[in-house]
Amino acid sequence: MVKTKKIFNVFFREKPALMLIHLLRKNGEVYASSLAKQVDCTYSHVVKVLQDMQSAGLVTFEKRGRLKVLILTKKGLEIATLIDRVNATF
Image (cartoon, rainbow, N blue to C red; front, side, top):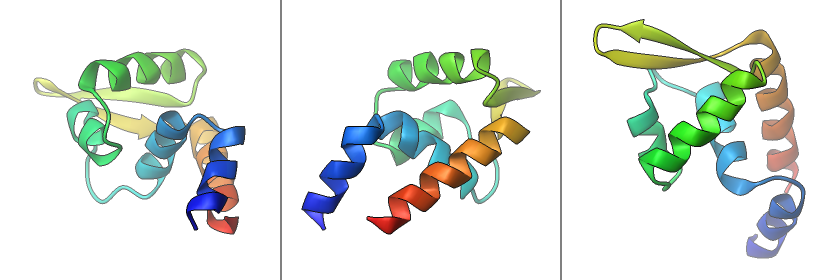
């Protein structure tokens, strides 16, 4: 299994792809800090990647009090679903 996971990383950057997959499979609300823990990444890196994803129209941030909840857009949902399907084949 380790060898097949390496080929997935050839086609996709691991952490951003995992972020989209975790947002797709979320149970409840997801915040940048919780996403950083789930994908084993620093908070600052997650925020930078999420800003890029927001610029690309893949995610939005919904303010709830002091917290920002991450939400996949329609485009983000479609791409996350495709990445998840590719990941599942390996």
